[in-house]
Image (cartoon, rainbow, N blue to C red):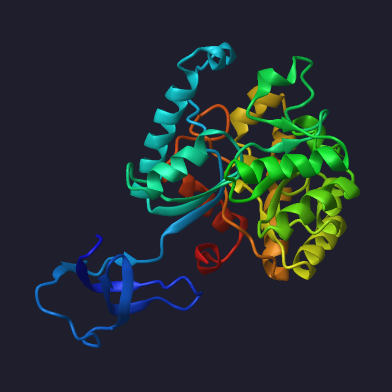
Length: 360
């Protein structure tokens, strides 16, 4: 669209501010920028512009998935395949296809919450080599040695692209290394474990001390970047908030409404955001029964707790970021990229959030 002017008319407009939809709208776009927007007949349309009559369809701003992984994951990949010489190239090609699927589904931006591939993918999109959404990429996530994806006894090198850092000095160096590699923000993990059945019982444990988290957050913010944290369990979430972390991902086991409200009040006080990754946290019955051995009652309790927490957060005024945690695989990290990402929006409405709040 660079260097061209487009005139779009005869559509219903949702502007993304929470205002009611406007009928009979029109827009003038030049060089990828909206020049004018208004009701029918309000724009002085230049001659020789390309006109689109949208035939009373609805137009709205592009969607954003605030937590996904452009890993290029697929079903049936044996773990050993990551050691094949072709592995990284294959994942990059798959991720490029996933990026194309996202933009075609109306996702014009996203945050990649950790991995090697997205940094190069972001740059290839920005230079115009391939189509895709605007990507903010974390690069390699930072974990403690016995933290997220850190409890397997195999050598840490088997689990690249993760980075292990322990103690203030290592944590600071890890942040500086990520920024040197081109990360747009820093991804850490402050609360985890118990992401299967133990999670139902509130068994998540913190994986970094407040001192370590503060060091990483200070280092990032002092250079103009923010920190997002994989945070399940009350202690890991509150430690991150105490340390000033901006973006809380996943966000708790939701078995204690009092603790949920305390967490949400602190998020609001800190002007932080919550990315609940609803599409991956919500559990379909057959999947949870097969993967975790949960009973029907367990699954129902889990999903009801999640929906209640979403309603509570929205009513309290928490800034909720629409997020899926999808990675391109139907078995690890949700569904294929593209139209499936909007399932997250459906779940938010099913949880009881007003549709316009979900759009915002």
